[in-house]
Length: 255
Image 1: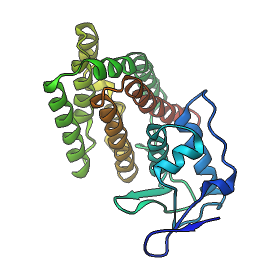
Image 2 (image 1 turned 135 degrees about the vertical axis):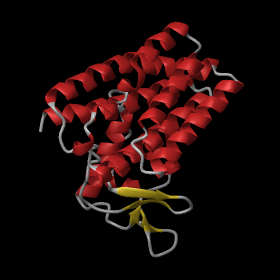
Image 3 (image 1 turned 90 degrees about the vertical axis):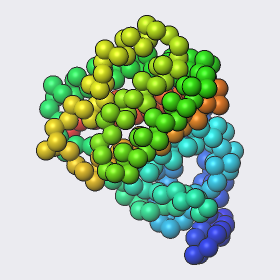
């Protein structure tokens, strides 16, 4: 049964009526949760204007952590399906997905370059995030928070936030306290940011803004895990952040 909650006649969903199963401990947990919720929305089982359950209830329904639920909801936001407002919760906006693709088209050669860099980053950055969670000091904390704030400001100003993106990830490598990791990462410079390889004429500004908004939220989850010294969550949130980017650009080859 759907429970009526909050103001403006909004409805909050009781997941029990959909016989949602707890997620098995294999594959990508955020993807499993996001796919389930997305299907319920696209099939009209969760209607436009209705609210999703709270994080705590979703955690209980799926048997996963709050980090997993947040990442899943971030994915739904990137598709334009839901919005989250402080004090209100997460509300379904539409029943058709609009994927946040930063460019209309990308040349196959450029996509190959992007995917190769992302493969390298997937090997390095989850480990760096884990080490940063274990080793960061007070100065690193200030630096990480400042770099995240700079990204938020760039997004608000409708910038592509390429430099701010790189500097946030660079700050994580600094906090990892491994000079060889840092040396390798420094050589990549801003070219490690996929958007740095995109032609300005091909960028879809509205979609890119939504995409960068998703990146901003994912950075926030990574930062929270690192500053909480939760090394497992830091590794997982970084992996999911980069894997989603890899998957997005991989899809350009299939169009």
